[in-house]
Length: 371
Image (tube, rainbow, N blue to C red; front, side, top):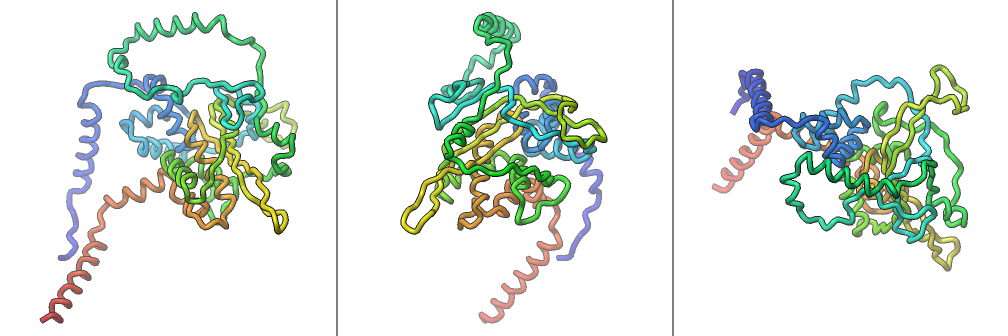
């Protein structure tokens, strides 16, 4: 069979796009961007994290355009991000200055400042709430009014309180190895393609942009047995951090004149991973290393899994796939993986026909020799 060119491709594509629009509109219902923002926090946070662009409005637009498809929404938002000019770089964010909304530790029951549960589904029964089917705006307004009245006498003072990190107290006891501050500018994988061996900044950036399910799966694989890394979560923080930029055309390190341009919500995790080190020939000493995870929005599972993989990739000598940075970093990117899998739907007529002809030739040769 020879190669036959397909005619009328443009018309077929245009018809397909119209059909796509029809499928989105045929229910004759319109979902507002503000509705997506108000009711789909988790989805918006996940899209912003994987697209590495913090913009809830555009994330909601991408979700609407993609009809709720995560992979398509991330693709749209990351494609838009690639068209934006890079006007400046923000100053390094100090997460101990976070306005904390949620802060828990699985390592210690009592931590300085106390555990702050915040908003989470961790303590729900995971049962379908059928009352949501008939939820009305009037019921929402009434619930909010009751909640605010109940909450108002319990509001804390207006004094801003910062929570010290759990790991800082352990460092004071000498339980963690101290390292000098490295002020080397981080590598940017959006400006330069990822190369191996990768720097830690490249690894962290790739992990925080990684597809949530893929990062979680590989973190779980390591936890389950491929490396047997079993950390204890030292601290999970969710909250807003301020973003500052230096004045244009100034190189001074004095940050008092920096411009405040806004704040972003992040999830930060520090996990304590037990490791055995040999300091003499007779004893194996137990120590802890820190695995670090951070991402946009409230993405706690992803950030914890990221902290596991961060510690794994610090030990490339281990013979497990979760310790192989090329295996991990090249297979968690949602756009790369989705694009490569999706390209299988594109025409492969010539290559397949070539393989088919080869198989036919072998089969004919076998039948000829069998006679």
